[in-house]
Amino acid sequence: MEGSGLWLSQRNFKIDSPRPNSSPKHQPLSNPGLSGSHTFLTIKATSQLSKAKMSGIEVAIFGPRDGVAAVKAVGEKLNGKTRLELNRTGSYEQNGLTPSTWELEHLNASLDHAGLQDVPVRIMIRPCGAPKLGPDFVYSDAEFEQMKSDIRKFKESKHMSRERGDGFVFGVLRQSCSVPQMLVVDRVRTAELKHLAGDDFKCVFHRAFDLVISTSRDEMWVDDLEWLKTQGMAVLTSGGCGNASNNTKALKQVLIETARIGQELIVGGGVRSDTLESLGNGMGGLGYIYALTSLHSVGMVLHSSFLKRDPSNVVSFDVEEARKFKATLYTLISSQGCAN
Image 1 (cartoon, rainbow, N blue to C red):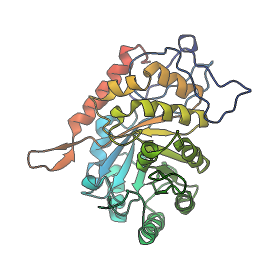
Image 2: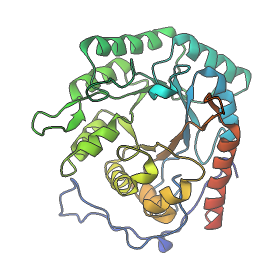
Image 3: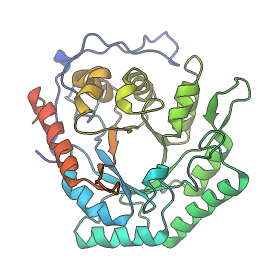
């Protein structure tokens, strides 16, 4: 089944699109009682649905050592291409920091040796962890200059590949000028980083967007989401602070909005084999998710690090969890008769 397409018939799943004379902005999409099993891979559409972009799994790794094991555990393709997010070795407790160019070079060498040279790699650009005082992802001038320098350094290293879909992952916030305590995307700095990355490398606005959602008033976060789309950026989020499975209502709305504007959504934050079913169910069910993403020709990606702690509190990659995740995903899909 690996790499195979999944199919849904339009006669089984109906989605109401916005009326032609209604404003497209913030237009909700209804869920007309669609149900099914619960996961987030999009499907190949039938001739009656526009073709959906294939999605897949993104594995966050903390150092180059686990790259090959991660891809082999979940499969190079799982109804879409598996990709890696590279973070600095040992930076998991800080939620991921910028790796070195040596770590990328070492990862590339191991992928090449394993015959996995086509696996896309996304580079985390994050100069420091959360501060003791003040909100995370609001950077000083020096920290922001470091982010720009790191992007230049990786591009100049020649270890990144446009052809395989490499790119950068970053997120910069600022305090809202009009609403106290509300955090918003720092558009000036984000645009500058995106410009430095260039059109050759894909960019993702990472889970800093969780704080935008959780501090937003009246769904003002949608404006930032739409702006990120104009920059050609995907969004990684858990739908708010905490794990994705605790934010399914918000995630469903994010899914609706990203589908409406044709933006890739990456769902991360506690995405594990034992949360897949409840996560999907809370977002409307497999049938709703598949039909919505197909109708609007967008992709959706699952993001996880598949880590475990041993008795001495050492964190390491959990091959068995990654395999269980893959098996659970297959089971959920197959149980609804969606497998080809």
